[in-house]
Image 1 (cartoon, rainbow, N blue to C red):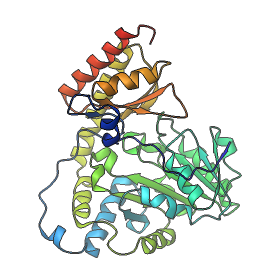
Image 2: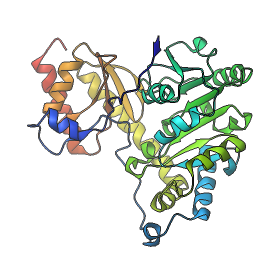
Image 3: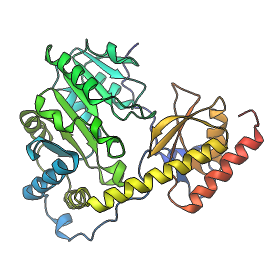
Length: 343
């Protein structure tokens, strides 16, 4: 299937649109439509200078060192900090020969849109073996929304196939903080035609900070830094990002906390008769013929989940952040099931 999607696409996290759609919903609205950790990293006290001065080069270097260690990059020279991974999508696409882009789908729909904007003929496919003939290949690993994971050897074989045609493999590891570390390609980027994207805001629960990273061979990383220009990452993001990525105790404890929360969510969903297709410890994807009805019932209860226009029987649930949210979700799902036993 060849697609040329240029228009902005629907995403999770839009509470403004949710309140317009469900104006009588109780407040506070509970946003379960993203894969963002609800147990966010505690913000450190920030010196006024981090807001008052332009971001300093040594602070950017220190962040690259912390990110290289946290993500397993060969060296800080392979790390490009950026104001979120979203801005990196089109920049990275421009480094491959223009022609055909192949996206392993279904997945995060911005990859297809930005590749089309960069001038590629975009093909979306569910088959890994259909990816190799492209100039630019994008794989999300673990995948959003179903949590599918491709092994390192399979990805490296794909990268080697692309290398013969001067092609580029982009692996979006936005959720690898809660994925199997052995599947990550961060340690392989010096091969030259692999770019790995890592999101900061999802695992650390600080999406509004707008911080992300591209990991690539040093020459490609240098070109990306030059394209981004000076002061791309804000002073507060430099300080908070460096502190969080270096906090191994918090990272380990949070992974355990998320695993427990994901098991609890599985039990809640299964108790409501919903079939879980997959996910990560930050979200679960369910399939039900009653998805449109359930989305509407939850919205009227002040709970936003993620729906998918291309897969109307799917809903993605993020993690509630406190006991009140857990209770509201449990009651809303149960009430929706009672009102429609066939769901």
